[in-house]
Amino acid sequence: MVKRNINKVKRTYRRASGFLGNSKMLNNPYFIGGVAGAIKNIINGKPAIDINNIQTRITQPNAKNPLLLLILGIVMNNTALKSIGAFDIIDPPTTTDEENIEEDLSDEEVDKLANEIIANTDDNIQEEKIYIHK
Image 1 (cartoon, rainbow, N blue to C red):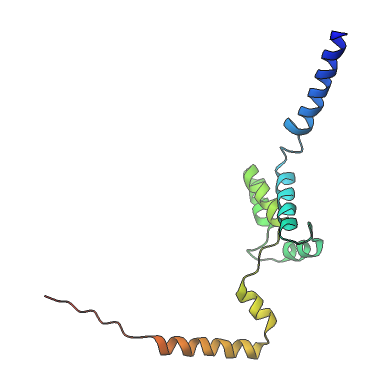
Image 2 (cartoon, rainbow, N blue to C red; image 1 turned 90 degrees about the vertical axis):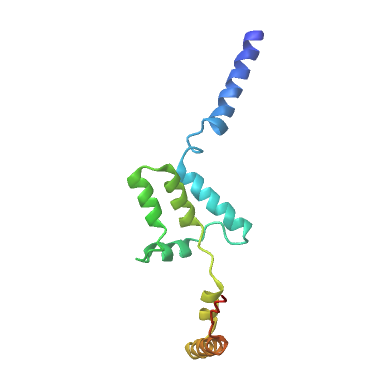
């Protein structure tokens, strides 16, 4: 009877440690980065994984491509860079206010706004004089 209970406890412990403690899935940097990105998207009210957004960001040949960090992590065999790269692939970058303004306004309105900003900065420039007192 005691031996049977000991075996049940051992089996339960092995199952629990395999799922949470020594799980290969939780040690996988790609899984951790992807899940963290999906959780952040859910918290921000976005869909967990937006395939169309990921496809457009990955296919752009520029320095903002999220595959660069992932490839760098694979080449350097660095698990932190691998998980950061997976996180960047899943989580889209946040847009700044300047990008939103440019998307909402036409080209003529953007030019007028830029000219107004330049005119305002020219008017506010004052010459600074340095006085040396002896």
